[in-house]
Amino acid sequence: MTRVLVPSGALGLNYDKEALRRGIAAKPDIIAIDGGSTDSGPSYLGRGVSKYARSSTKIEWAGLMEARAEAGCPLVIGTAGTCGADSAVDWMLDITREIASEQGRPLKVAVLRSSQSPVDVAQAFLEAKVAPLANAPEISADLIRNCTNIVALAGAEQIDAALATGADIVIAGRTTDTAIIAALPLREGCHVGGAWHGAKIGECGALCASNPQSGVILVDFDKDGFTVTPLADGAHATPHTVSAHMLYENSDPFILYEPGGYLDVTDATYDAVDQTSVRVSGSKWVPSDQYSVKLEGARPAGFQTVLMALLRDQHYVANAQRWADDIVEKCSAKARDRLNLTAADFQIEIRLIGQTASFGDLESNQTTPPEVGAIGIVTAKSEALSQEIGQLLNPYLLHHPLTAEEEQPTFAFLFSPAEMYRGQTYEFALNHVLHLSDPMEAFKLEVHEIG
View 1 (cartoon, rainbow, N blue to C red):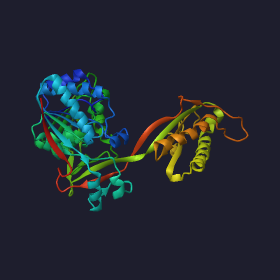
View 2 (cartoon, rainbow, N blue to C red; view 1 turned 45 degrees about the vertical axis):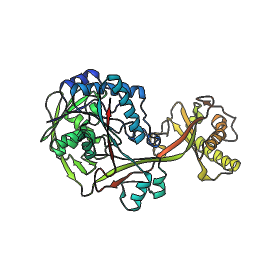
View 3 (cartoon, helix red, strand yellow; view 1 turned 90 degrees about the vertical axis):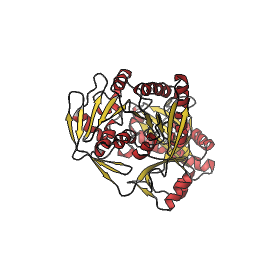
View 4 (cartoon, rainbow, N blue to C red; view 1 turned 60 degrees about the horizontal axis):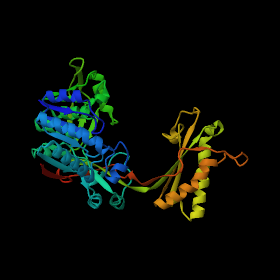
């Protein structure tokens, strides 16, 4: 049996310290935690930074490093620094060095790097080694080369290579959420389908249980399947909570694709062991003919200036979309005329919070709210141009009437000055896979002796 302790869904979300102590007392074979994902959008990958505060990350990571020392087992973090780019991995390595010095313990740290050279990925694209996933955007070699950061999602094979160094701590760049959990059970000969399925269930800690914010769970893997046990007071896993997690961040409740194949849980059975634990068996792993890893890339998408006004007059609330469309049309025309621009040089949009900001034209709820927040977003090729057009937009959001015959209204800006400069923005550019002849071909492994 291989016992994996998962403290939380991500480093930075906190974990139940008493539950963690119970997990350490259960003598885990490895402690595994995720460091982030693309959930918060492309900016973190584009800039190669973490979204979590360094102070909070350090406190939580120090607690896990203490737990690792007490348990005498490896500690693994995947997708270090939210995005897993090399700069974020180095940020996490610096924090680890700092804590190791404060705790006074020498450490062996394996660093798995997932960053890809945009030039190399562009060449792989030209050689037909990059393939689109479903609904992938059209790409070109030039688009790829324009990415500021590209990462490949490591699987269990790459994490296994890092563990094989005998490291106390593994800091991995971008990985699949499951890889850091599945790697050791696979290495120790546990059921392959069970290893991947249990890793999927455990990826977000206690999200598969009745007290999802508690974080800490144990997943026990063996030759037939796995058992999941949440460790916090009041946290219970049930066949429903466990089976439902296959739908978390996954469009298919039965199939999950990973590097090297896919997990099929169509025939899996979920049985309550007691009021807390659930036993799962019958999961299958289907190897693929071609080993591929997913690519994530972000590229610059222009500079932005944002303004926000609040509408409470019911006449304007009821006609907010018509008001917003008229502003976009008139201000865009003014910007083209006065700044000698083309439509390709900038974009103005107004998103109506409380009405259509989430779904736009797809919104089906047509009730009239008491107020609407109007967010004006200007995106342009330079920061100066974005700010200039933002100032052109300002008087429209403050005073624009629905018709020429109406008296001039005045709306409320959220701040003064109204213009909020967001600087460089980014967009996701890749939803593709990279075909590899060897699992380590796109990854780099380093070993650091600390202390």
